[in-house]
Length: 102
Image (cartoon, rainbow, N blue to C red; front, side, top):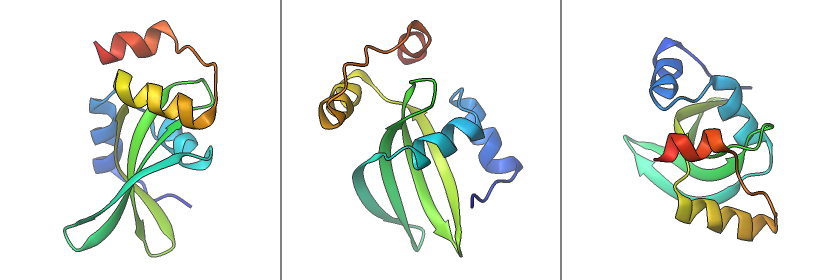
């Protein structure tokens, strides 16, 4: 279902994100932020939540029938508030996530 290699896994690691977390965001009913055309491919920018409650932004594209995560990173406070409003959640976020954003 997902297209992973050393390159995109290493890129996520630079943002302290695991491939499992990026997959969770995509699979856990994310909110679409925008669609882009980059390097001849369509990309989707979404915000969503991991199983542990981290709110992340993920950029994906389709490679054949596989989803390729181009990048993912912790959402800044403004986007976190937007996401929580869209989801109608009372999630307050954890200290780990706050530390990553500062």
